[in-house]
Image 1 (cartoon, rainbow, N blue to C red):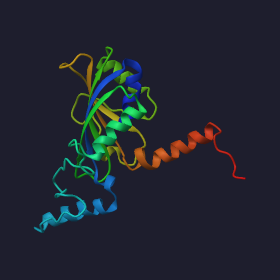
Image 2: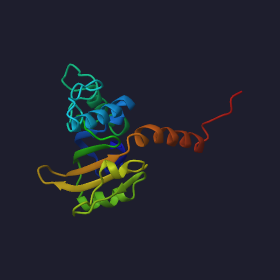
Image 3: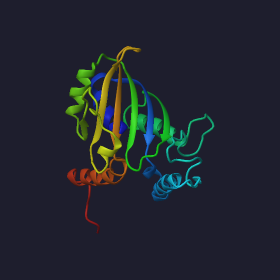
Length: 208
């Protein structure tokens, strides 16, 4: 979902650096993790102390800045994947840093993204570009509730973008909020879209 949001902006103004904080739902860890959030949440209301099993700490009513194993440089493997995959799919010259956090949400990953560009781009230009981008839905009203949360994104195919605004602390900077159903975009939906692309390009042949 991060690259879906960044690609049209990169094509327009060329991204130099990205700082991303991810807020990832428990479904990214599988059914046992979802069960753990459910059971811990119920248990707290009946004064049963939560016992972590899938995660290293209580996940109910908590956030955990730790996804996957720690690496020698202090980053986790999940954070490294964000760096490596963004560079691979977008541009190896882009500088990327990430903090990945597990949050007590059943479905839907969210990302707060700070972007620094080589060329000038305004919030209005970014908003217009993203509205025309494939697979993207912009929900960005500067009023109460004028943004997307994981609850609204669950079950949807689009990558939603909200809170588009300029960052005055750097030259050519923007902040955006990105939300997507991680069980669809990034998993099942991607598989279907890749298969459709193979068929459309005539790359599939009948087995002998």
